Length: 87
Length: 446
Image (cartoon, rainbow over all chains, first blue to last red; front, side, top):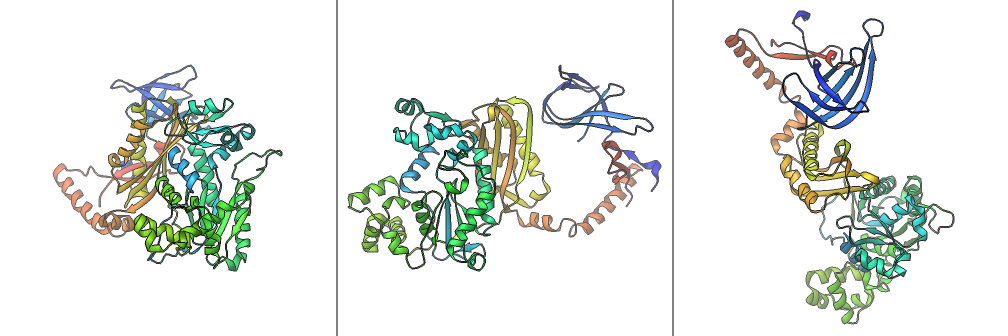
């Protein structure tokens, strides 16, 4: 297997997210296109990893967007940026 | 629901078919025990709200909130009956406590009961909510006489965590066991009549050969009669099964047709209906919890479509068509909503499965906003022959053909576009908590 031919899959995409007073996502805006309302929030969890090199800290939400799409949103707790990813 | 149950309460809930030439079934039994818990749903409510046992109370019907479904003995004493409107009932009994039905909870409790019974025998046939038949053929070797089998059933039910009735010391129904009536006999009808004659917490056992004698003294109301037939039998001066059985069978048939033959044979104790168990299908469930409770029907219908779509994609569904689908909703303030659709023509098509559910959603929507919605496929029919082949042999039968076809297609694409454009998904760190690190794509070169 030639590793230089590996392509990443399910790479997180940066998005803008409007949150409510409790920090829960309300509207998700991709770079292209209008914002989508969050219909429902399923599970929430936190990932803390790789503290020994480049620490990773994420707060993740499994959400259903307006139109029925089910995605995982996460807030990078170090940079404060939001990302979207497939579940 | 209310009307059907009201009739059942007057003329008995027995409604089994006459079986003459049933094919042999390994999950069938001629000797039967009938386990019956009257007013099951109301007793489930009493377990959650013990104060109900000391007050006249009633459950509302789940399809129309203006009529009563089950009525407690105290309320009955005040003249309240199932099927009455709320205004009629309140007029008769000002202190009547009305409860919203919670069918999901009752269903869960009933499932516990069935699970407990299936620990005694593999042949369990649910009848109505709170009633079930247990096949007891061959259990003598394990538990001895019928009394031993009945005792084992009662013990299992006590241990299963079923919560019905009041658990207060002052109550006469202190534990599930004392609310259960059990009957044992040859065939389902005899077992049912025996259970209906048993004291709360007790059992009536009808030994083989004693059926006709036992049944002869029973009132006509234990037969599965409609009100018109019951009235006509009364007009003929008949009050007991013995009086009916004393008439010539053909005379009853000439008056009441095929249904009359069935009634006569049941009354005479010559019809032995077997208990038929079923292989329990493992249901497929898809559920969604709403961020905020949803009351709009359009939104619920859309969520329903999405859940059906998700459930249909489940690997266990492949090769099978859905026959029974249920939708459960947990409502605000602890209430619930449950609908079940049996598809006459089993289907794997989302819209066809959704159609009867949408109708129910329109006609009898949830009585409150929905917090959680779940779709459950509980029974299946085999799919078309090609789907069955795919389901059973997906990884073996098709593998060789698929690889050959892929190789040809990849070669053609590479010839036309100068590069493959086909990729293979490979595992990189499948254990990683970061989804983007679990898998990667690599050029596919067969």
